[in-house]
Length: 113
Length: 113
Image (tube, rainbow over all chains, first blue to last red):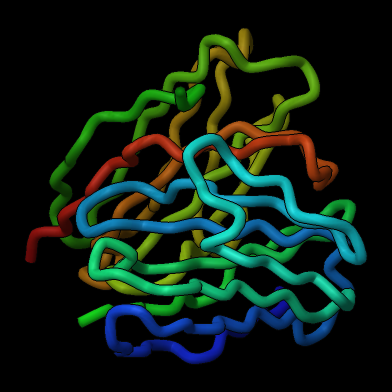
């Protein structure tokens, strides 16, 4: 199957700083990117959905000014956690999708101290 | 709310078949049943999907009832490496921005040596 990568795989940052997470589809063109968040021992929760070249659609309760999503190309989407706080510590997972295929990335572990 | 319900946990002896049930009584006609699994601190791994016919691949078999209201994932010869959380979700086959994917809590499968 296709490969989706995320970078970094883990990151530790100080409270108040911003962190950018990249999601790349390595061998197919992803027209849609989904971003999920997963807290310990919980299921994946959809944060937002984006189509290439257009603004992301955020789920209820997810602050769009705090979680900035850019999907500028068919192979790259970024999630920027701005002014991170300890409660933003979580496992962030992207899913890249084309018309009949979708693949998850390996996830990024964010720890905010 | 998730459109699927699964038992929270199951045990299976190594070498035996693991049968994981899933109820999806409100599934729509154009929705497929997808199964993923997630090993600790990794992104979800695709296992199998189906619409109404039973499906088999190198990893597992999927049995869907005739009324499509429930399904069973079968791992024919479980190994310790199959210990994971297994998610059953329903989704349309075409990836579109407005098709929200909601993960339930999944089944935590323990393979016993």
